[in-house]
Image (cartoon, rainbow, N blue to C red; front, top):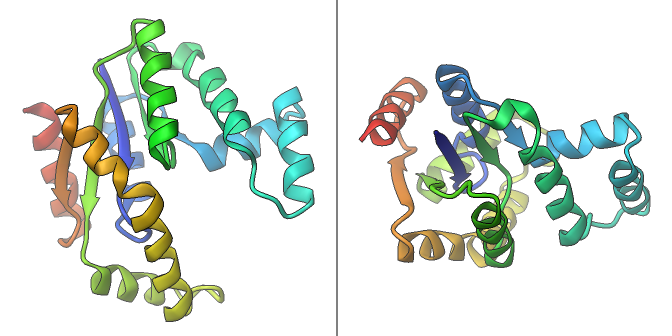
Length: 184
C-alpha cells in the first residue's frame, strides 16, 4: 500500500514525477487542481461552491479543499494507495489529512520532498516560457512556498515520514531515485 504526498518548490518536477510514479505503481495521481476542475465540470455540490469562489477571483477556502480531498480519497481506485500532488499546502492541512487517515485506518503515508535549488527552479520555470512566469513572479512564488509549504518538510520530518529526493538531476535520474527511495 503506497500513500505518497509530493512536496517541493514550483518547478521541481512534482507533477511530472508524481504522474510517472502513479503509472509505475498503478495507483491514482491525485492533483487538487484536477479534483477542483472535475468537481466543477461534474457540477457536484462542492464543485458549485468552489466555482462561486473562483468566479469572484478568490481562493477556494481550506475547508472546501479538504472536503474535496476527503471525497476523492474514498473513491474505489484508491484502495491500493495514491499520490497526492498539491495537498497539503500547509501544516493545518497536513494535520487534517493525518486525522482523516487515522480515522479510516489509512495511515502509513510518506511525504516526498523533491528538493531543487532556487536558481535551477527559476531557470526551469523561465524555460517554460509562460507569460506569467517572469523572474520576479517566480521569486515571489518561491517566497510564498518557503513561508507556507516549507514548514511541512519539518512537520513530516519530525514524524519520520519524510523522504527527500534530489530534484536537481535529469528527469530520468529523479524517477530512478524516487523508485529506489520508495522501495527502501
